[in-house]
Image (cartoon, rainbow, N blue to C red; front, side, top):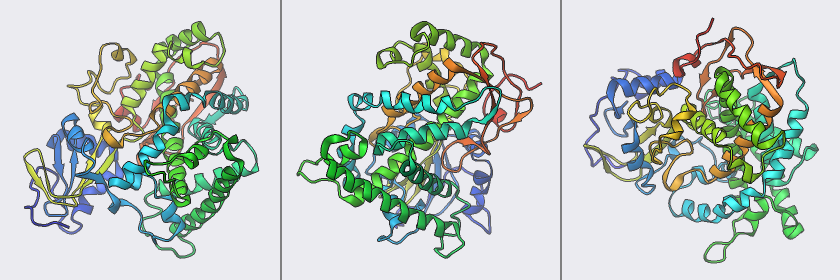
Length: 473
């Protein structure tokens, strides 16, 4: 660490005299969204939770989003927040994807992966997505309550397994999907890995064993793809075939890390975005009625084609507004690779910086009535990439953005065409942010046939602190 630069003395909460910065972050762990909003309200766009190197601070708003996210050399991914692990372990290999990389390694592999997510390539997944969505919805039984958060996870899981690995609903897909989901459940629960000791009985030990099983199965899929040649056009096949400027392919270890990262990022974020979309639409019946009218007029009950998706402006505005209010990646983390300047402050190397799309999207100067769900606002506004960043921004922006948006729109369209979802009276919803923004304990909704009897259910809980919803009766 570089201590040649003076310590950071910027406004912020007073460190705990015993626990230091860890004490200052305890409220963040208890109520991340409340902590972030309160920090911005109290201290403005920059707030420190330490007074001495290595510094830890929060930066809010488009000015600092641009400064930090546009410079991936100075402000790199923060490896110090990753779980400690042996370099030669399966756990290290499955976790070594784009999100964990910096520098030339990141640039090289991102360039190699980009063709898999080009708009023309992603368009080829439309039929697969519709088939997976309709298969899942065919199992829904009206008049029964469902955990909609879990249902969205199952849909995005099926889409991910099919588009990544060409795995349909069979034993192999089920086995690999279960392994992925079990590992993500531990990874996305910081308390489970608070003590990262690889001894039997610990969550970390279970995670390490899951990683070994995942690696074995993905290596077998890589071998199968190579043997089959070009008969498959899934993401794995594309990544196997790609070459860099020097003619080098991704190694098997690199393929394992990238496919696991793609699965984790796409599956978790898309399912959470869909869950929040269904909540917001149920709570705003007029918007839902207008959206249903748009879908019926354009689609007549059919699944939208790519051309029709472009002719559904309200669906597009609804998705934009959902991702503004409830961005799954509500917090981004960077560290300074070298000493640098941020605003009027000198930062030493190894300073950890938290940014928040969640807070940026609630700045009143950028968005009027920022906690109100108002898709119509997108008819008048055109925010910059650093004012609206549900998928990040700059050279590390999510490469799966086009894929995710198409999936989210297709799922919403098919659900709204077929079903009306409503909250049982007194439903409690509390957002939590272990790594991505999701409802704690799931989100149960009653499934009805699509009868257009749209009305807002009574919703209680912490969701009312971050959204302006109809009054709970």
